[in-house]
Image 1: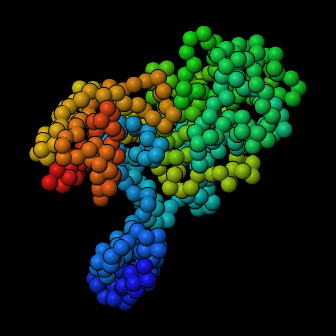
Image 2 (image 1 turned 60 degrees about the vertical axis):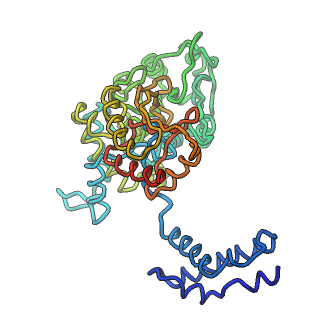
Length: 452
């Protein structure tokens, strides 16, 4: 063991073998790190001879480590899973026009809080509020960094130390173990549960309202559905009761769609139903950046914006730039369906996707892999539209004697632009619903290298 340790090369000898134009301090640190790992492995008895850990091998390992340090961990991938709002892959992608606007705002100074008309300080969200008012008919709006923050801020500003009435069937877990009861508690309000998991009636709300009640909260169960023997109070009924009893009506709509999907409420309808405050995400069915949007009546939004939490939770300038550019596309709903990537993918027909998959198949036939077309079902993802399946088409790659599907999937993940696919019944599927056609050549090149 001591003899093996003595054969480990000196740092300077390894450094002399590296011809990469990387900072010397980084290379030296990486060489030392690699040598330390080899020493540990030798002491564990994992090496019995020196040649495998020569200076050249150490140099190679150190170069790979150094290059990895200059590669951002947050980088683009090709989503071939068919899940449009893939939470692990960043949910809603931006359109080219939105991304270009964000780029221009990011690369220079902007009118973030400057009024060009008066030459004085202005509102950072005035333009966005006007767009939201025009699209949804809401009186006022407030933007924060995500929907959980939106609900937390509303409860903190409007329901502190008072009861908030919620149906037991709507005490959802938002994701990442964030649950509605905990958000209510952190907002300084007191949860008052009513009804049963599967049935809640308007009488349950009416009987629960007392002197300590400040609000009736309805939470859209956007990531699951209760089926069968059920009863649910409509938003309009709840809002009318709240007005009658002089308490607030609050609606956490979750995904927040401006487009009519089957069985999915729209923000516009929620406003029309007369609810006082509506909270929803910007990066789900809206197809914008991660943010939380609060719509409602002017007096309540003013109180929300005046709360100290607002400054801590407000959205940054790049999110605001992306949201405003996305909302502009909604001024024409048909254009939005084509230009907002999330909507374009969700509304793509099975026929269009089959033609798209056929084009990818044609490129992959040259790889000599066992490829074929396969009809598949996709999902919206991101906790949205849980009951809807989207017919799609994929290029299916089957295993053969030369490789396993697990090895192929790993090869795709390690490509220079990682390709994230899914495996089903020992078949690798490249679902074209979520693949931009500009990436077809990249996928073909990656698979050709594997086949070779």
